[in-house]
Image (cartoon, rainbow, N blue to C red; front, side, top):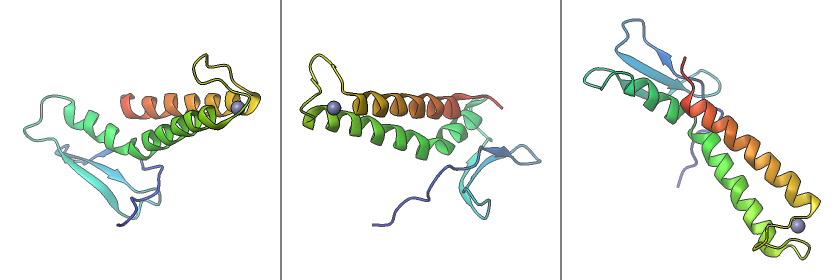
Length: 111
Ligand SMILES: [Zn+2]
C-alpha cells in the first residue's frame, strides 16, 4: 500500500473563476485535491478544502496522542489512571497538544 503525500499540505487556494478550491502538496508541484464549489452549500467547499489540507497535521496530532498513551501505559514512573506523569510524558503531552491545536486551527481557519 502506498503512503500519503507527506505534509504539510498547502493551504487551499480558490481558482480565479471561483468554481473550485485546490489543495496542493508541500512543493506546489501538484494538487492533492480539487473541491468543486458548484452545487455546494455556501462556504462548505472552502471548509472542506481546509479540512483536507489539514489532514496530515491532524494525523500527526493523533499519532502524538497515541505516543502519549503508549508512554503512560509502559512507563514505570507514570500512572495512566491518575494521569500523574514523568517529565518525558509531560513534554510529550505538551508537544501533542500544541500540534493538535495548530492542526485544528489550520482545519478551521477562514482565509
Ligand atoms: Zn513516564
